[in-house]
Length: 342
Ligand SMILES: [Zn+2]
Image 1 (cartoon, rainbow, N blue to C red):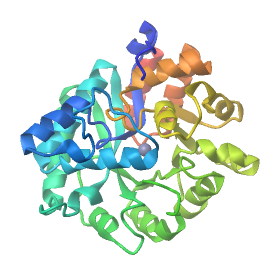
Image 2 (image 1 turned 120 degrees about the horizontal axis):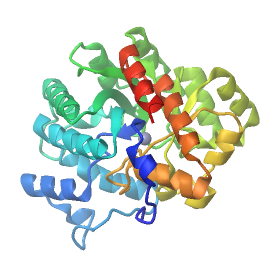
Image 3 (image 1 turned 30 degrees about the vertical axis):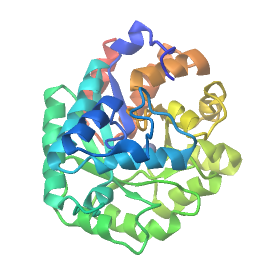
């Protein structure tokens, strides 16, 4: 997996921010194992041979099956606190100072097996406590709540009603659109995004990961994307690339995720250098660090070793990510000052 990529000390030391990381995707094997024991759950349907030492997948659907087992273990606000604090501990050890963490309310509110879903209050309180704990580790977390396009159909208003309910967690900054793109276009979600933007939320949908350039265009034109999750397949359409550059829309690039979910053929051939050469704004992220057995420092090391990103390039990307983030003005000043003092 990602073990050969050891970050040089200056990368480890560099203060960092991350804009594309899923709370539910941050669960490590150890956390999944601990929550399995806590809830006396049965993992045999996804791992008939017992717990793996590392997660591995054969494409997106196989990943989704294992991911959903992990989700089934998040049954209370306390479980969300556990996962948020684990993520914060990992981030603190890598000098990650600020993160916009995506969480999928819909999947927690759904009834599953014989259990009712989590109540919106419990979900909110869990995220608020998780965010407080993260701050105690020196990591400022803000939240993105996304609609899972392959689960929540456009005629459902569960997520958008929740976002408008006033019962959302502190630090909620944006609405996202996640899940499998093929067969689940963005356009039908345009009314949801309009409602979210009307209450001040930013727009950060995934697009151009499992589907091509047209999906990125729709995210931009129909959902008002301010940043695009992944977006790597925009390169299929030079006109789209020009428009993304002109509008300054940042792509949240996740190399290991693209490799493991077979969006690209090999890490060595990841299109990050082409995206940069095209003048696109990019930042580097983990996506689902627990499931993908990676962390931000490792992703930066991969970009250095395989994709020609220098330390100076990394500092510049971090600066640009700060600009494209929804951190407060004070937080941005503090983050920039810390980078300047390197
Ligand atoms: Zn993602």
